[in-house]
Length: 300
Image (cartoon, rainbow, N blue to C red; front, side, top):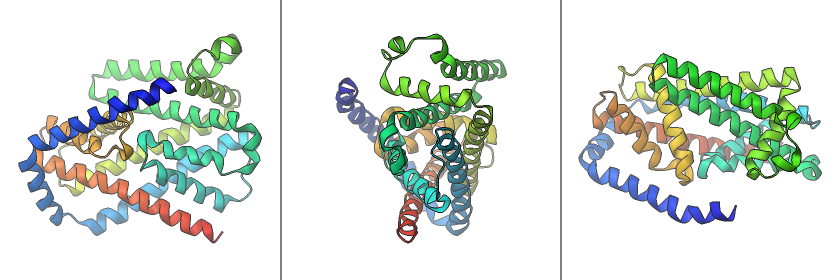
């Protein structure tokens, strides 16, 4: 952990310099994109995006509900449970690698004596999300590569889930703590078929909705030549870059990644930047929704 924290001193400045360099080299397109933002149908974009964001949050809440139930901590108050999830996901939009979402682990006082298992469930979620992003990023490649990545990723996740049956704890404890926690969480999931099916379904649905949301954002930037499959590849690639950069909220990294990906697909640079800025607006909307969930929880 100490090495990881020390690495932040180099990773974050390097990411910031890379993003700053991107914008310095694209100043003219950036100014043009800012002018074109006035032509965006913001009311329609916000209305559609809020609906999709809430659906994404709903699927992720169902996934967490299933994991907590499998651990024996079935939520008592569904409304408060969902509002807590909204707060955590809103925090995730602000923090490096969406780590703010870990706050949901601490909302239920009953888990205070069993935080290791709950953190394991959260780590299992992160492994599943990481696997989903790898699969989405592979959509940029040929079909054989997509099939290879899909089968390999699923096999890797399932292998981690059964690792505790064949490998001693003393050996597993030598692994990095987040990976060990993820293996512990996955071992709980794979031995319960209904929980496993719910886990896989909600994970796939939440990312499918995220791809749809980005595709809608590209549409509001009047980008129609990018298919939804290519949008999925952009979601996977850019989100992986944001997580790796450890920049809070991925500010700058996301915009640079989206603009570069869209430009590589033949989209005009200024139009690509408009789309990137609209996606940034989705993050702002998520933060605002998280704040509203917090205010609503105060009255529950």
